Image (cartoon, rainbow over all chains, first blue to last red; front, side, top):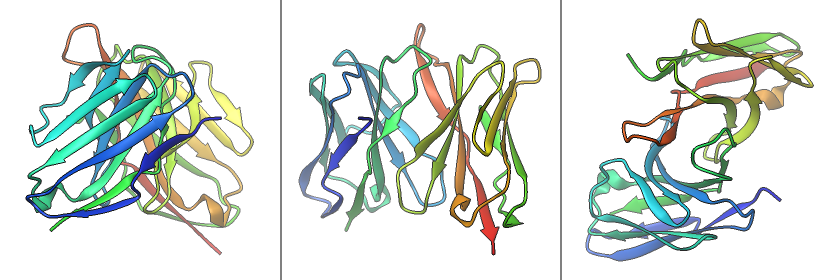
Length: 114
Length: 114
């Protein structure tokens, strides 16, 4: 089973709201990722967690706050977002971070900031 | 120079045609290589990993040329269902010492015409 799940599928939030995106995998993968994808652009890496520790933060604004409560779960907490943050947010996992293993993506959360 | 470059296309080809995509990468220390397929408003799905010896999966053949730093994807006997964006992904050293990250090319759009 190569399934990564994400909730919610769609999210509309105002600039003063606080919301969270959730991601889950049960493949025993030890690396998990958050990407942001705008229309007609490739996914852009935001964060990498390896063995539940933050490994890479691609200079993401602090209004995005990642959390890895355990090896199967990855959250992205959102606060005071801007309209330009509207995008598809993709979660992915791979067996290890520093390896040749493939990444598997969840279906994404389509976020609209109003 | 971008870390991973692809011709954005679009490639419009008739059913049954053979089409080839190339992808170049900048870092000679890159470790692993993949092709993903992404349908409109969906997540990227792994198509195939790319090995040094080249590999084939049905109508799809991927090749790696480390000396020239490019990978290729050949699709034979194109089907309407092959219409999608094809993303080249390279796992290369991150600026942070000891870590690697997956870098996406801009993607190549393919449209197979009846």
